Length: 347
Ligand code: F0G
Image 1 (spheres, rainbow, N blue to C red):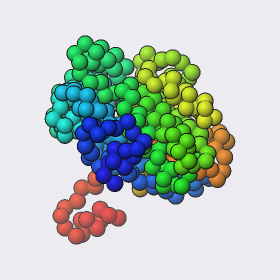
Image 2 (image 1 turned 60 degrees about the horizontal axis):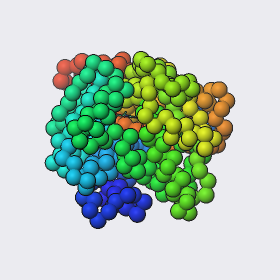
Image 3 (image 1 turned 135 degrees about the vertical axis):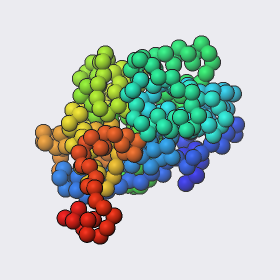
Image 4 (image 1 turned 90 degrees about the vertical axis):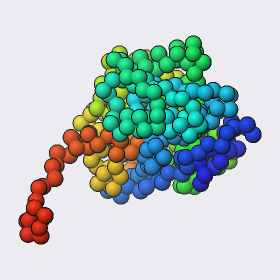
């Protein structure tokens, strides 16, 4: 596939004037997870969004947001980010010769994501505040300086991201029983729900999935039924967000689908993160939250046997190597470069 705009053109708000823009985002695999399926007594498939061009699901929304910004004559884009949004924005902006400005929480974004934004030539401003504060600032700057805002409050972002729901249905031939995903700023759960409803209205499927949104316990306003959490904290920095911008849409998705919000601790996230790797997929910590949620709900007897479940693994594990090395405290064994030493190290 040539990227989501071409693949799903008739479902997207594109016109003859929308520039051709693609890094071949989308068309990500749905990978069966045999060991986790067995452990949980379900049929679990992993929608591995880490295989997008910048390594996260953000590419789907960003290709749309940047193409539409260019169509509308913008010369620059701005976003707040816990890392992945900035990587995607910077990549697509570079491609369109647009300046990209990003605001990030100082010291709280994964190294790989920062490296991406740097390589793609973004102007990076690191603030001594969290994502929520950064988002508030970029909203103001966008309005006063006339710079296109490409956070998921930009409706084109959700339009692009809804294509992941289309792909899940195209692959399975129907919707799964449950679609489980991590929730931070709550754009993605809203986008999936929009995508499923639209695809059904086009006759592509009969039943809708239940939407299960999983938050990190230290950053879980939706799971706790709160309007906001003031000092969000979690090692899954991608979802370290206290005031989700799309909270209303996300609650609608969960209510209308008879789904749920739940939350998992950092230890539960790390445990799930290691387990996903044992099914051969390396995702980033935030992406393991839905797996941790499934494990928790299974243990509580709330995950019926035999269900078909899709968990969205939103980002690639290579983005955050530091957490991987902390999570699995294994150091390489040192050996001399000769057969005997290496063999003895192997044993
Ligand atoms: N997973 C990953 C890997 C993310 O980067 C994000 C959000 C989410 C899940 C949550 O998605 O916000 O739509 O509920 N990352 C944003 C960013 C906030 O700046 O990259 P959401």
